[in-house]
Length: 381
Image 1 (tube, rainbow, N blue to C red):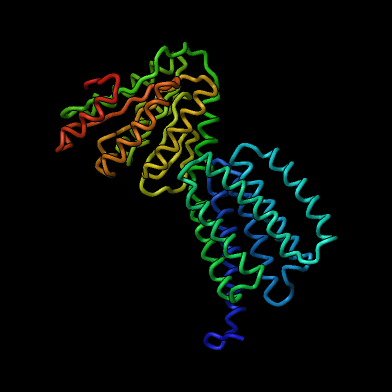
Image 2: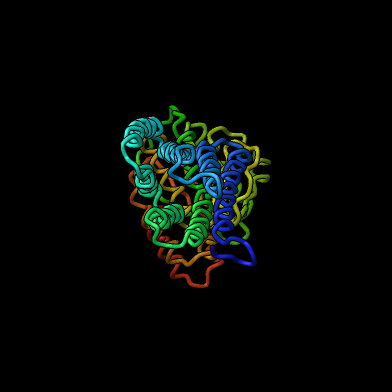
């Protein structure tokens, strides 16, 4: 027995791994409860982690993984995780059908296979496959979550075959779960698609837009009042035609309070996306989302807007305020790559993208000229 300060190191590691797993589950349930619009992904994964952590704690002295009660908890936890992935993919019914089939297969194998540890890989690989599909759908924003599950799978291989000390496996597994938790608590992949689908699938009687385009709104001098007036007028005129507007505002440069005072947020055809460095708890306003200010999250948002506007043939204005602050906060080349990457998709969809920029805040005029060449229209204010 290996000891650390008089404690059984293997037992200590098992307790740490178990309680960290339970903590991950409780944290995800807390996200589910506090988030104003319920997301069953967090709920299902929270339950999965709590059950998984419980079976780890039961293996400290009482049971081993090969005991049927513990193996059952392990298997059910993976079912919850797998169902959560199915919910995030919008394929819950198909995933539940797979769960039923796999459950039947594993039930038969339990009666005929002596080593239950080998059977643990069946639902494990099934879950990894689901996470991989989620990675394909959501892109780079899923990298952390996918990496965490790959690490957890790799850690469990020496656990099954006894290739590493048990205490080391438990500590490594706990670390992998914290990585998974970090990826799972990113509200982007779990909320953006659902919210954009709900908002953009409310059909309207709007006249189809003949040509989607990208326009730059050029703000010169003290143009604050003109900017707010232009946004209000554009939103109002679009709404009268049944065209939806998504306001993407960086760093609350135009605060929700200002938009509310202008009456913009009272319009049912308006959705507000706040882009902030820290994503905190949502407000009570229903048509509002907060995302992180990294370009991956912004690109993921635009991809979902394009996807659901195309699927539903819903006309949509997207107003981004402002390009200049996005460039100041990130490398301009990365921002330029994002815009050029999304431009073909935007031009082939029923979307008008209006991007505000303030040329006076840029020392290098060449940088701005590159963005102006992408635009089909420049609107001076």
